[in-house]
Length: 181
Image (cartoon, rainbow, N blue to C red; front, side, top):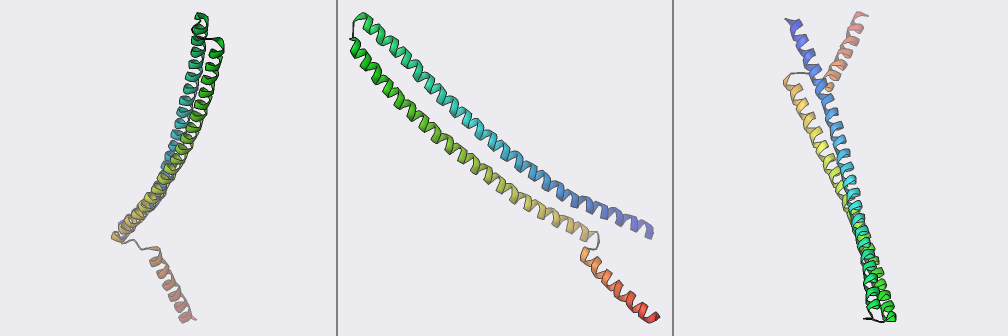
């Protein structure tokens, strides 16, 4: 009968050890999730940057195409004699200046938007990481409390109980040795 109780307690201790290892596994899983979320935020930031870049390039391409079409249109007007060549040159110069100013404004706005998006993505990643760390700590505490409760309900002694008993046994051993002498 005593042998069965000993085997049962060994099984309970092993289960307890597995639960402690479970705490480590939960922590590792949470850390991996934090890394995954942070990497996803970085990827999304990069995607946003690429999208902004494509929009910028498309805008510049449209401006260039518009300039070419405007040049052709002005040349046709000159050929028909509807405007003078000097007026055509002035008109094209004015269009080029406006296009350059527009390009500068678009570039400036896209860089500003890019920086803002990068800051927001970095802040989001930091917030997610902080939240995940808090959740990991709460989960770890809850798991430790659960393990402690299970151990108490199974009457498994704690480390301090075992240490106290070891001290008492040591004292009793010294007293017995003293009585034998």
